[in-house]
Length: 111
Length: 127
Image 1 (cartoon, each protein chain N blue to C red):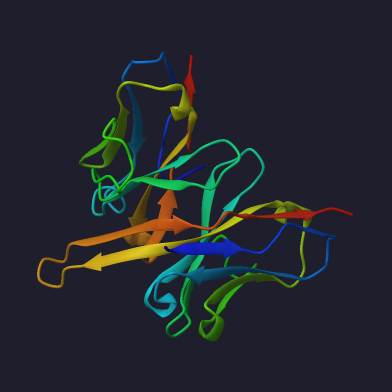
Image 2: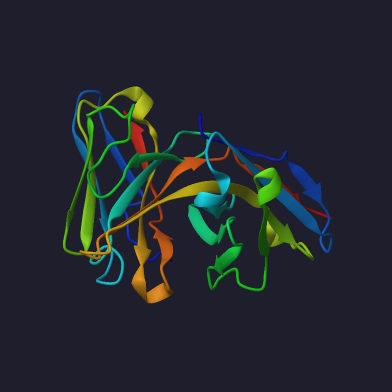
């Protein structure tokens, strides 16, 4: 049981826009920034979104993040086949002495 | 270029000890926390703990406290994760990752995220 809650799966067709939600509490998402990681099949996780809505250099602007209260979401527009991956949200948790908590992950399938 | 290079895959028997490594390059190794993350087969990411190589300050997730030991040798820019007695349930991929920190003392605003990841070390424990 992960501290942050994500849907286990999501899907879309090429070109569509999909969103993945991440729900937490006042001690994590409610009081700290949210980060998103993309894990392509057979590879290490990669930072996709940091500080709620910032993209690292090299990440396409098709990816965007937002946060409101104790929830966050990742949006992918213009879905492409190479976006098929697992996506994880994460935040630091003040109730756990500043430890990081991850969501359970969402497997995105491009139909 | 920032890189974290982890040691190779390991196959061990239950009860054996193991130490895997994560070597940083391309940045000041002593100035950033290094975290360890477990991913069991077909499962999600679990944070295990973190170390600051500059002074070896170490924090553990309650789930992993007492189960593993995290250490670092700043002279060779390498962090370690070790087990004294492996169990079959330790079978997993293990990732190290560098943590980016930002804290504004005036506003209390902070940002923490893992910006660079190692390639992972697969540990298989089987009799």
